[in-house]
Amino acid sequence: MATCKVLNATAKGLENAHARSVIGDFGLSFVKDAGVLLQPTRYKIVVALKTANRPMYVDEIAHKIGEKPRLTSFHLAMMEHGGFLSSEWKEVRKANSPSGKAGRFFKLTPKVDAVFSALKTQLP
Image (cartoon, rainbow, N blue to C red; front, side):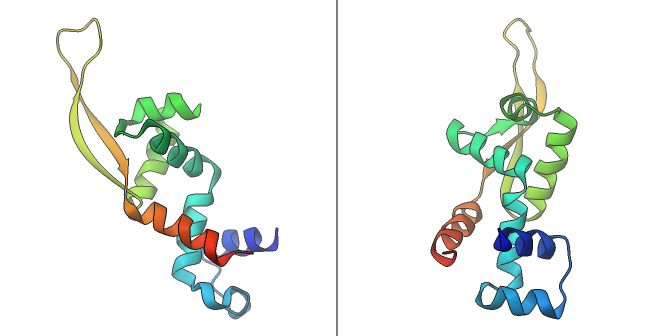
């Protein structure tokens, strides 16, 4: 429980001397990365993309995690900015439509596995 509080405090930018002393060998960069991924909506996005095992577009992800597309887009942007996702524009085709629309497809980067792997080895 205490580790989660430190992760959340550091991820929000509270980088004071006490937080640094509690974090110790983790390093602030690692703790910030872990805090980004452990945010509940973002964690659901990671799980959705891992289980799909393919790139997904915003509406698909939002539907799978039970959130609105606008909120999902916000979290996807934050994760992409942090280097946890990459994206590319592709055509999205609907079953009963002759033409498609452009959709941004997201996939996880290796950074996600690296952070989760480090969490498993570093935490008791």
